[in-house]
Image: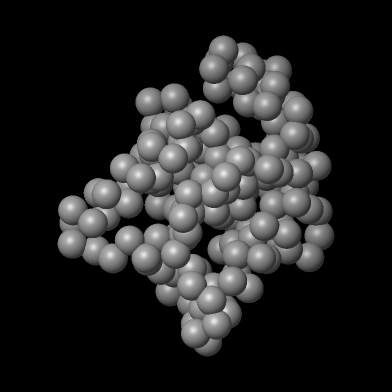
Length: 167
């Protein structure tokens, strides 16, 4: 299975969710600002990377974990990824897109805009990192639900094929 955590730019909420999924950030306590800022891809994905599926690691069950910035046209990006997967001869039912945008708060939006879009990293990064820390409980919930869903699927209880989510 390939789990792809998606958000608008792929630079903040999806890398943090992927790190939680892989156990790189503790799920037992609120992470420090420093721990968040050291997450792979955190506040380091550029606009030209939008639409690229970026590898993060392999989870304890052998699932490949990725992040994807999909911009405002989520359906088209996800469909393009699925189509590419089919063209490569793979089964698109092995892709699970997990939308983490619902965890994003105003600090993350403004901080991400300042840091990534305007290049004002000194102002934007602290704001987006604080926002990410505030969003952590919601991201943890999304990751926990995703892992439960994957576990249920391995027992044949649910399908993990992810049709495009409605926002």
